Length: 169
Image (cartoon, rainbow, N blue to C red):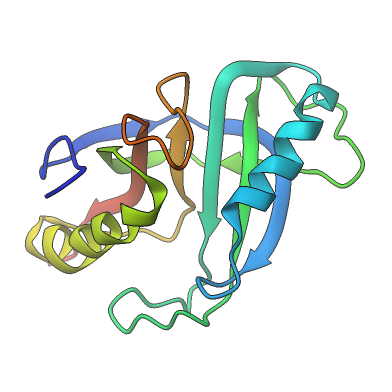
């Protein structure tokens, strides 16, 4: 799969993580990730106790959101956020988000943002249905550190974290 460093994810357990960022209600049709991240990055210095180079692009999909019957107009919550060492002051216009502990399938993607939808398609249409896991109802996110070089840089690298649980048999 072009852009994926491996078609088989690493299964990791996330410990609870605190984030602070800017949340927007979006759909695939209305999303403007570049503007969202630009707004956040211009204000990130207002966040006390942030962890350097530990950024999160988080999606909170509601219980009715469907990946099998994908609707590009379906609305979800999209976050541009940074990890913080502890709960504290939250700047005006920002919110806190707690990523709950749990099991995740972690894929590494290297490439430009406009090709990312192909990776999402592979994960939800090919890998997940044939795996021993099913989707869990927790936030999905991309972890961005110093390896992330921007949306248009083909050498940009990010981790894609998909919440999973063992299939109920």
